[in-house]
Length: 180
Ligand code: 5GP
Ligand code: MG
Image (cartoon, rainbow, N blue to C red; front, top):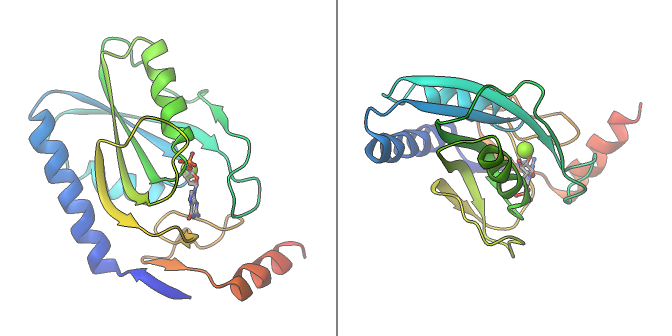
């Protein structure tokens, strides 16, 4: 496994993200929504660094059907909190094709949110398939499959405190192991 961002680098990036969000919203109350499961670790670190009063909720979105390439997007809003008349900040681990944040942003507006902005730990430098771009980004990364700090491969590696690139051999070994 090759480390792309160390624990210290991630900490600094999350602090920078929090400062930018604080400067933008000031002390306006904010509804902060985690796009689960990948944003779990970032979310816990980020919301504790923001200064405004917050309402906190989650939605579940998944597009990786057990692989390393993007699949059909599924969004489950069963656990969502009220966003009507509220300023919403969506938090996700990574902006890749952009389909997830584009779709969930639209959902928030349909539910009556006053405004919707997005914050991500990582912005992958790839061909995005939507017009929207994230408002707050901690790091730009090359187009490689990364794990750690919330990001998984077959539900593993989310607990790593750093961000790493899996080699093809490691991807194969993890896949083989998950079949047993
Ligand atoms: P998008 O909808 O922007 O294509 O993809 C966003 C979702 O795909 C992210 O929330 C994340 O769960 C997943 N994803 C995209 N790139 C990677 C990656 O390099 N590693 C992992 N583990 N997940 C990724
Ligand atoms: Mg995700």
